[in-house]
Image (cartoon, rainbow, N blue to C red; front, side):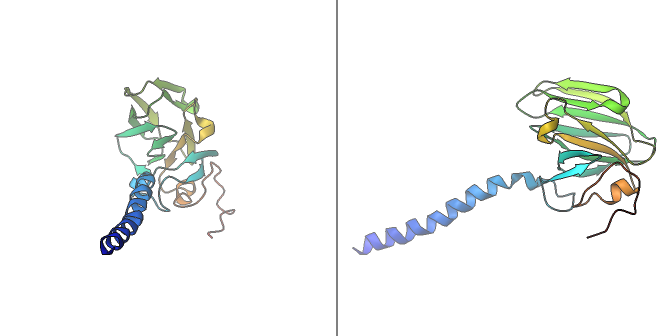
Length: 171
């Protein structure tokens, strides 16, 4: 009888432990600690709904992960007019694409495939890029001029490609 009680107590102790294991795997999208507001949320960036996986300031070259329904980093910021080489890596399980229509770039990658493209940070504000196959699922991002109003509203908030700063209320 006493053994059954001990087993019942042990079994009840395992239930929360197992539940904790399950919840930690679902929070794996929070691995991008560079951005404000947590990981994996959605926000409007350069006029497009995007699955947010961080912001990165670049100089000459950077890696961009194309995964199933997001780009990481989602926002790439640099100096106005700066040319940047993006090392695109499809780490997803399906075909993805990097389209930057404003600069005539349209590159499709199969799972596991890599490619390089050269982009130009816009003269002001932000310009969007997206996966033409999964844009409606939030697979989008933007090139942004560091320090301008478009980049200032990004952490934890909404960013658009307009350059008017008077509409931002700061709450």
